[in-house]
Picture 1 (cartoon, rainbow, N blue to C red):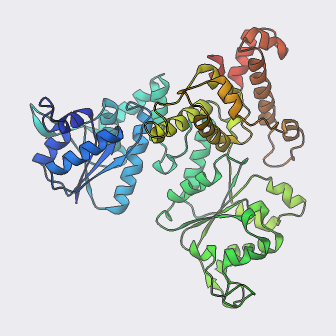
Picture 2: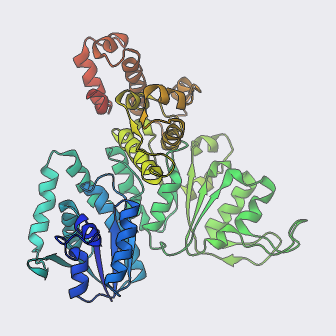
Length: 502
């Protein structure tokens, strides 16, 4: 099977609008001169343009084609383009593993063409073609050495966009839903990618809202079990009397309301992955049963005496310190070591240097893409003082709180421009227990004095800037630093570089 992949470019759109200068457009021209079994097109156009082009192309060719939405914040964002391309090719290859791929370089932006070349030479071998009205359609020969030299050249560039692109080249598409540019998250994702290939239990630790389930799904999608089920369980949401029945199933008549046999969640996840969220909420009795399942790779439904063999990978998550819970007698030590074969710590948003602005931009862009022209007339935009207020917020609820706040802002704000006053209304006024989080932490394997000192420094540096309206000289006096240059150095030291540029 031969599959053509291409971005829909503006010349293709002009062709669908019967512009004589565009002819059939790059895509139409290729489909008239070459044979393919299937065509997959990526679309970053407005809805009306995409619909019109789809209708027009259906009149030009009988080759089966599909148009996949691949939204970008900009058609020149290398990293985003790479992620969209890779995640779609992975899906295509899983459906058509033996397909021969062809990438069309002509439609779209130069950044899109560059990504096609890199992808073809690094991850998915493919024929590269280009087309023009003057020269027709031809295969492009790109020696591997050109691409091999291209990536180091990107690394040497100081442009942040290109640096981010190179970093994204090394990140599997399965982790493409995780938005980041910080070194902290880069290291964490590298660990997750490494363990994904090994059939061991993973314990993901982190505060509420840091994206633990998102990581669990990415690990599953990167593992040899990716085609098998992924079953997520919130251990804290199951009634105590039903936990064993939910996890391991039950036989008809096992208890009063057991009117029929029930398959447990572990059996549903057989050959795949089960994600046990909030594992610290599991009562001791269920912990005993879970330990036996992990030791013997067998489950016994409630009311049954015949065990069933299962093959399940367990990824668990908690916002508690499980070693502290072990010391208190609330969590079994033997179960902890079974679950924590490979622990992964997800840093809170306040420790992810540079990610906050990136996430704000991402969430706002997604909401505009979904709702502009529908629920609101024009794109919502943040005024500078509004963005500063968001950056200075503590985000105790982490990425989840940020995402919900951006959504709340867009709903509450009638005008396209979001002001500082709008932001202050949208933010929760509940005071976080900063002193308790800092002073009463348990000492143990996850305790880090440098991290805690960093949290304190970031908290007060942000407050000082906020209370002096970004006047660094006055802010330096508030925190007893000698001058604004020293204050700048502290901002740099504690990963608040974005505030240094304000």
